[in-house]
Amino acid sequence: MTSPAAHLSAVRVPKWAFAVALLGLIVTYLVLQENGLALGASSELLHEFFHDGRHALGVPCH
Amino acid sequence: MITTYKSLALRGIAAGGIAGAVSALVQLLVTEIPIRAALAVEEAREPAAGEGHSHGEEELVSRGAQVVGGMLGVIIVGIAVGLVFATAYALSKRWFTDRTPFSRSLALGAAVFGAVALLPWLKYPGNPPAVGDPETVNYRTALYLGVVAAGLVIVWGASWLAERLRAQSQPVRVTGVLLAVVAAVAVVLLAFPAPPDTIPADMPVAVLWQFRLSSLAQLATLYVGLGVVFGLLIDPATRRTKAAAKVAVA
Image (cartoon, rainbow over all chains, first blue to last red; front, side):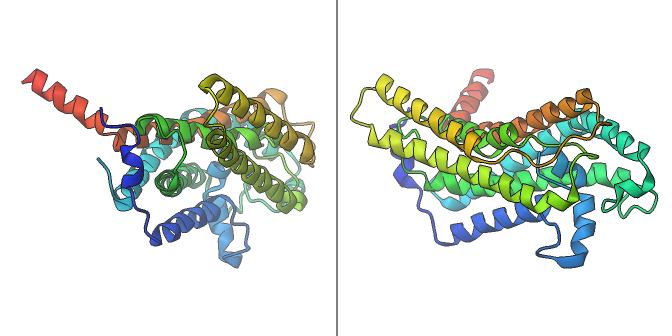
């Protein structure tokens, strides 16, 4: 066994990690929430394509 | 031993992809059953009643494409959430610091499930197709995101409180944190307004709840699965046992 807290201080988080996390949130938003706010009219295709997944993950849909 | 953010992020992507794929499989085999039943309810209505959402003949995307797209969407969400999860894990400085990486990841996965899936499910349970007034979708989305944000604040607050109670004995500390979490969850459930939509009379209760429970199973698969797989991928103990097994076989 390694010492319990040894893995904690070992990881240095660079600034771009926040950009990566933000990208993850944006992608999640586009798949689950896009109702036309960000992409306008082309979002309807996206909305319909991911339709079942949005329902299945319990997100308000229509 | 994993020491860089990049290696954690890559494992987050892998774990999210795997958990998302298993969750998508649950969707195909379990959640699609009540979704099909709900779409049948929708189709039985007058053609004019189902405005604003195309399931009819002039549909934008075919039903088959929606099934595949829905599964793909769950996998993409899994990967995206995996990245956020790995970043949160890398940033966490007080989350169960005395435990192994696997235990920490599993506990974080369970906490995230509670905050962003179980709590909103309790307050605003998901609805199948044929339920939901398009007029109120933005209001419902705001409520839903509000509960998700409140859930994440509770998780963060629980970890903060556990750190503050460090001087106490473990039973006292755990009891204190549990009481605070229960109180905070009760406040959130009482403070947020009731879901605005009524369930249409033509929607069978059995279909509605089969859908909701399937949805919950799928969410648990996604988030707890993410915690398990990420933990397996980052914990050096996983590799060590594999190596030992190889030696034993040889």
